[in-house]
Length: 471
Image 1 (tube, rainbow, N blue to C red):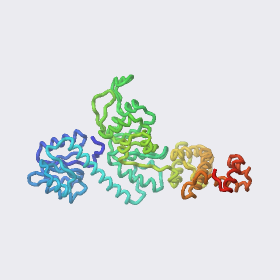
Image 2 (image 1 turned 120 degrees about the vertical axis):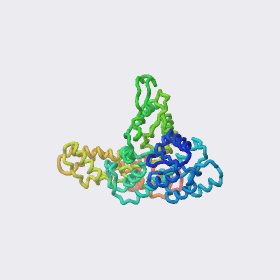
Image 3 (image 1 turned 135 degrees about the vertical axis):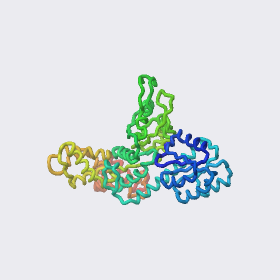
């Protein structure tokens, strides 16, 4: 089954010929399309549509009593959200054009060729899924902020940045497309992956695995499983993680580190939902949703040949990017409060309150380890707490000299923002010499010490500028 299919709506097949109904239904079921409604009497179609749940209709043109050409404009007008493909024994161009004008999305010539049938249905399902997703997105972003699904209970935030990401996650979760989650280490990528699974209402497990450092053989064995004798030491049958996930979600963390050979196998799985366990010639199908995450820049990895471009585009049908903590410092207070309460419960202590001085300190830090790093700091502070507010010592010890280094970096960046365009090396050299002379009161020897060069080098630059010479 193609991974673009979603069981959230059904496909109606309408034809008075029982043979056509059976062949079309069988071909679709073999491909994994399970939500099928076979209809022989055309008059039964509209009541079924009114009952809800139909997303795609395969409609025969020539039927007794009510023909497809009569039903087509009614469905298109009353239910424009439904994608329709007309089935006809006549490939007359004028008839095809008329069908498109009345609202059909495609047409199929009978006897319907299997490959053409599957390709058309997959495309219509994808169109329908995309339209429904856009509708949900519009609804979610028009809702007032503050309403959050239970699936986000473990994600602590008070700002708007994550709120909009949660709304997007809620909108895409019911689809079956793969999801790419990006963000730095420690931002909470797995929490969002679990939210995608929970909100999607999938019946199977959430199966997480970190694939960093796995060679191709280990990755293939872990993902697809093996049969006895597949390789040296394979003494029994092992169920792969894709089998364990079944109708659930397989979460592959650190996807940016996947070996190129393994990327080919993952791409095939995403494109066909088919795989072979190692040592087996029995083809198996997967209905698991694939969610992946990385802290790497996959665009850069593509340019260096470390990541396949086709796999990247297949993975990012939906993309969730989680901003680092330094870009959402408004979450500091609720995060510290949450982690203090969690640590207090674990350590058997009353959670201490944080002082304004603590937040002043934390706001000057860039948090390379993000939320996970903050959690570690808070736990240690609660562990050392005896009385009064949350102690600053553990935070200062963890941060060390990083704030000063960050401040120096920021001041350098601010210095260059004074220029409309980047200065030349000669201009930078003049600037540094002038500043060193200013700070040393014009003393060239002292200026040389500040710059870490010889007094002769400073004197040479001063003379060269005085007489209009270039280095």
